[in-house]
Image (cartoon, rainbow, N blue to C red; front, side, top):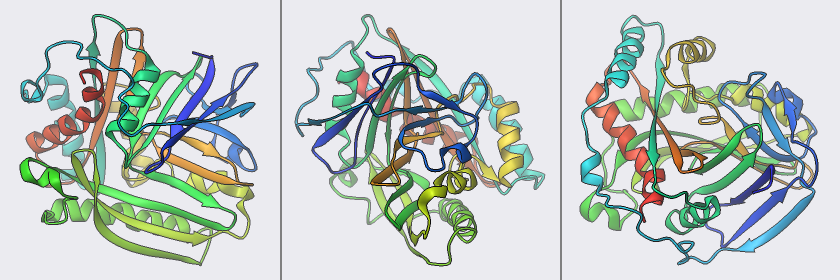
Length: 352
């Protein structure tokens, strides 16, 4: 693959868009504010550092590709695999992290904090990243699917339901997405509309929605919240509220992104303190997981999504990332199982 290439497919569409920078490396940015007035495909990490910058891929070449709904990219079964074998007890590392994070909630240092983890899958032979991209497109029509490959970031595949920021002209939207339940049995035939949400999930989603409201109030007085409602993403459902708003000047999208990122959906509250605690204490650095990516083009259309359900691809090694929001009444077993369910989104692409 090119040293600076991205291909993405928006939810409920039958085509993908290829973005390629034909010479040089993507521009490296140290802050979302530097995205003001810029255009290109953005790849942003959870924590911006010198080694892990925001990358802006210049769209020298833009090509639209048809995606067939029943095309799994020529995939074949790679090895024996059964989801039932994956429901193992929490790892020692996760147990240590959970105890550490949860103790902060019990001490009232945070209202919410997100704990993430990473697992590695190794295949006998490498799988073509584009094959995995097209598999994800076929399996997850409701999600934003993106594959990015640059020298600085490495190769990442994401399938995510969470809009960071979308807009055309003065009309923009974002969402508050939190709370997770897994669909099983006959529930898989529907959209999860009959499920009853726990108090913990409702509280978690409300925290995210309140934070987004406070961020938008800094930039516009013309916004509306609709929801929450239940939405499906693969075999999971989440609670989602939609925010639509007007921006008189869209040349300052970077400032809004700086305020929003990272949202409590991937970080916690208070935001700065939770962010610093995560960076210092999580066993596995998140890198570009729980950042955001997508096409930024204030003069046309912008589609930026939070990088959830991520896979970092390196030869025949696949690092899968997932996380879950912890509140004071969270339990280790429930949170572990939630991350297991989220890991299935990427893991299943390897074994179709």
